Length: 114
Length: 113
Image (cartoon, rainbow over all chains, first blue to last red; front, side, top):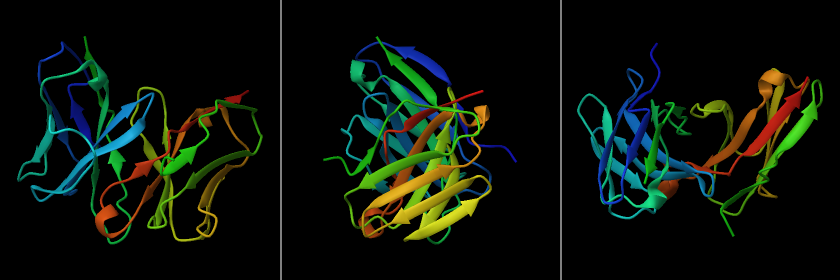
């Protein structure tokens, strides 16, 4: 069974540009979450989607957005990049069983903003 | 005060030692408690999850939750060099806190052969 696939794995952008990251969840998983991981702040929740609807959103500026498609694949976009956006962006999928939202993470997309 | 506090370490132990990893939290709404392990250049992988207070054992790993003290622990028995990784505690609430995990910053563990 294939895991969570994130593309691209590494990318370098300059300040002011925008970036789109892609995530393919495990087959049959309908929930996709995004997290930002930095050495200073650790893992921080960005947003969660289920059946193309955003159900929860973390405390990030509006430059961070996402969407989910009908096949459960998801993308996140960061516009007007800032140096502080350099981070590992992790996507995770879940079957959303009753109870805990047990996540399976991808390997992440490492973004460097110069 | 952050919602979840975790000692970042690093923690270095000899092979075969018992390792104790801990997190404290302040949000009483947390109901689900998880431990993830993250190897370098990889995404976190779930080790264990528990609901409410009590103990849960899986092989060499034991998770404990004490909701009255807002304290959770992960014990690793007979630690192996392959256990060297960063360990992250994570918690989830209900209602408005559903569908998002709040993570500790992680404890970096090295098991020395």
